[in-house]
Length: 163
Image (tube, rainbow, N blue to C red; front, top):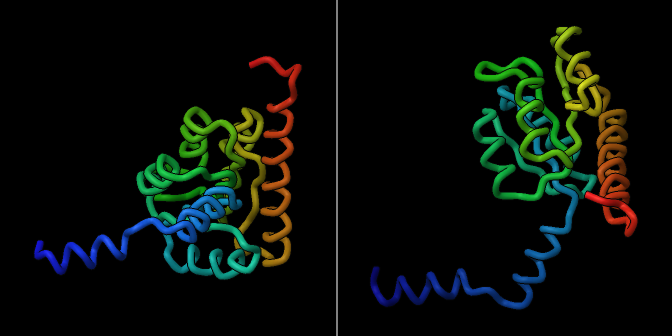
């Protein structure tokens, strides 16, 4: 790398107080992960939820979703049920083991009632929503999921709560 390129790189990546402040705000924001193997569904969901002020990550494969979960503090996850490499309930079963505090929502046009019921009964899924979705209902359910997450976190911080 030339000296000029190095200088430009350092200037672009230098952490200013404003940038650090923006990063900390970003970390404190409500973060949502969307997982669906159909890109058009991810775009549509992002479009519907973007105005709510959430920090939104998208993944079209479960492996990509796990990488995002490892890198970011995600509170709410919406996943399709029917995907090629791993279905939504299997994905959420693993997510529950690794990230038990997340609020997990299945959004699917496919309803395998037994696996979804089992996942809900085992606490792996917070809600099951169907495609096609109503935009306002989806926004309401996601707001409710973030409130649920915040309530659970507040309970964990009670002084008499033992871990």
